Length: 517
Image (tube, rainbow, N blue to C red; front, side, top):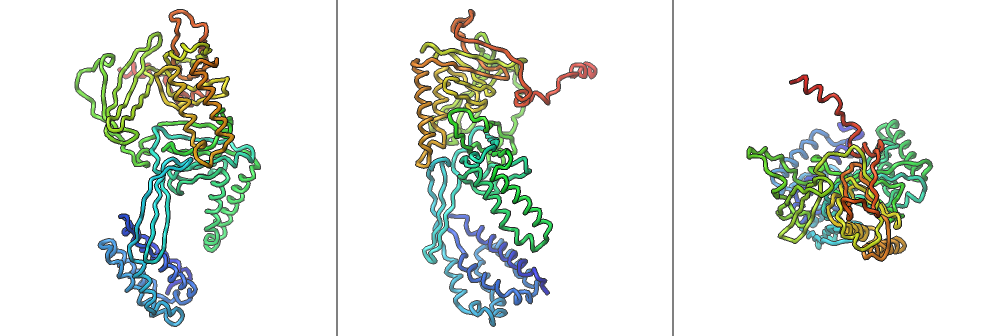
C-alpha cells in the first residue's frame, strides 16, 4: 500500500508525463494546453485518504507505459483519457465530476490547437527581445513569454559592485538569462540559465532569491527541520544584506556581454563599480551556442613573409552572421614597434570592424602618455590603443577602463568619436524610463567632447597602459614634443594580476633546457 507521501509521488509521475507531452506538442508555432485539466485534477487533492488506497506499483506501471507510447508517437496523447477511467470509477463517491462527461469534454476542448505569435521588438535597457504570445480561441487561455534577441557581444563582461550604502541597493540591473549573480561574502550564487532575464535592482534580485527560498520552506519542514532551519538562517542573512548592515560585494558575470549595472555618476568614474571585459572561454562559447573554431592543422608550406603579405581567413559577420573575410597584416609603427591589424568587411550588410593586437611582448614597465590638446591639428595624430590601455580626460572627469573599446589603431579624433558613440549608446539613457538628470549629464558630456574634437576646448588626454604597448604620435619626432609627456612606471601587484604576470614563472627554464640537451 502507498505510504503517506504516495500522493506526492503520483503527482510527480503525472507531472513528468504531462511535461513531456507539452514539450512534444510545442515544437511548431502551435501548442496544446492543459490548464483546465489541472483545475479539475487539483480537486482530487482534497481526497488524500482515498488516493493513499491506490496501488503504487500498478499506477506506476501504467504511467510508465503511457510515457513510452508518447515517446514513440505523441499522437497517442488521447489515450491519457482512458487512463483516467480507473481513477474516475474509484473516486466516484466523493468526486462525481470525474465520472461525468464534463471532464472528457473539457480535455478534448483543451486539446484543440492554438496559435503562437512571435514579435521581434526593442525596448529600453534590454535591446532586442522576442515576445512570444500564445492564445487559444477554443478555451480563451493565453500566455506571454519574453526572450532576449540581442546579439552576443564580442567579449564577456563582469560587474563587481561594492555595496556600501542603502542607495546602492536601488541601482538598476539588467541580468540576462545567461548571467551569473554572486555574493562572495555569503558564498551565494544564482547560476546561469536558472532564471529568466530581468530588469530590476540589486535589492530586487536579492528579494527574488529570498522569495524563491521561502517558497519551498513548507516542503523542507515536512521532510526535516535541520535543512529548513539552515535555510531560515540563510534567508535572515539575505534580509540583513537588504538593510546594508555591513558592506558586501555584488557580482554579475555575463559571458554574452549583455548585462548591465547602473553607474549613477555617469559619465564620471564610479569608484564602487569595477567593470571588466574578458575573452570568453571555449566552454562559455559552447554554453551560449557559439561555434568553436577547431584548430587548423599546421601548414607544411614555407614560412610566409608576414610583413609583405595580407593574410585572410574566413569568419562570420558579427551583425548579420553571413560569411565574411577578415584581413590580417603585420605593420611597423615608426618609432614604436610592430602591431597586428585585423579588419573585417561584410559584403552582405556592409558592416565593417577593425581590431589591433600587439605584436610584441609585455614591456618591463608600464607607459603613461599625457597630451595637452591645444590645437585642432592634434586630432590628426596617429594613436595605438591596446586592449590593456585605459583613457582619461581630467577636464571632463572621464575615465574609460581597459578593454572597453578593445584594441584600436586610428587617429585621436577617431578615438574620441568612438568614446562619444559609446557614451550615447548607454542603455540607461534610452526610452521613456530613462532618468532625465542622467540623460542631461551625458548630453552635456557629449557636447564638451565635441568641443574638444572641433578644437574649441583645450584638454589633457591621458593613455595609461600597464603593458606598455600603446602609442601616441609625436608630431615633432625625433625631437621632443613640448605638449606630450611619456612616463615609464613600475606596475602594481594588481596590474600584474590583471595581465596574468604574477603566476608566470620564467626563472630556471634556460638551465633546465640546457640540461636536457
